[in-house]
Length: 322
Ligand SMILES: Nc1nc2c(ncn2[C@@H]2O[C@H](COP(=O)(O)OP(=O)(O)O)[C@@H](O)[C@H]2O)c(=O)[nH]1
Ligand SMILES: [Mg+2]
Ligand SMILES: [Zn+2]
Image (cartoon, protein in one colour):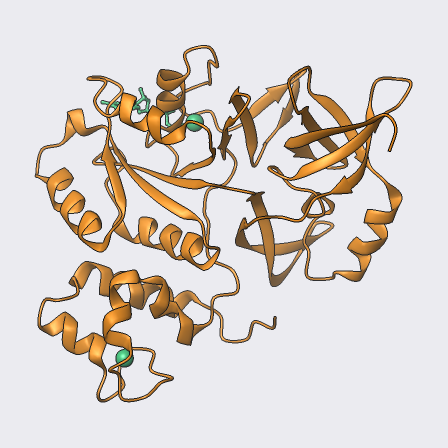
């Protein structure tokens, strides 16, 4: 089509989609062509209008006379990360659990944690790993604030996760350790950064890209033209091929749509044992002849990972329809 420009969605806010044009230039505020909204009403499992087009989506748009744009086309997603969210209608909670897309077309999910302040929490990491594995997204674990490490936390978890086969990297904004290696992992990729508040996400991003100047400390909202808005995901362009999606407004990411009997497959080190469970519907928490329980007893699977598994099993809904 004539006048059609390709770009990537960098941020969404109610009915506005901010698109980064391919090849550079200023971000264009776009709306959606009406045809997409019609589709939206048919998909009742979608939470918000902003789920039609999400951060990371490749789109084509046309420029209006006033300089804003209209999105005509949304390319198919290579992958996407979603989370379980509670549906809200007006001011009343309806309690339905639905899928909210965090971002799409992700090459790496960086799960940022700190050795302390806030304390290292492996269950939070495992929840993210399951979410990423179920969406076929590569995971990198970051252990930040290692300048504050005292009780050998760093070594313990480095060993545990690298034995499973995960890339895990220690970093510190104070000593600069790991920063160059982290930068090398990011280059040429679309990277999603997620971590609990206070682990040092913004500090790391500022250290990696001194020009971007993200606010560090307690602030979890971005201020846009004096307006107070909580931005859930925000894509930062580092160069033509390198992007980072920051997630300042997303406190928790619970996997959506993972079935109980599939959960074990997203704990990668379980896979060589699962086939030996007596029942093929085994959920590995009580069943006789469970090969996972046996492997935990024989220290072939770590107790920490197994306990994470049990915690997730409790929180997964049985009644999700696909
Ligand atoms: N000692 C130490 N403190 C850090 C490090 N990274 C961040 N911090 C501090 O941790 C606090 C939270 O950092 P921030 O980047 O805002 O975390 P975010 O909420 O994940 O974006 C700030 O006071 C930072 O100065 C680090 O590597 N070492
Ligand atoms: Mg921050
Ligand atoms: Zn089993």
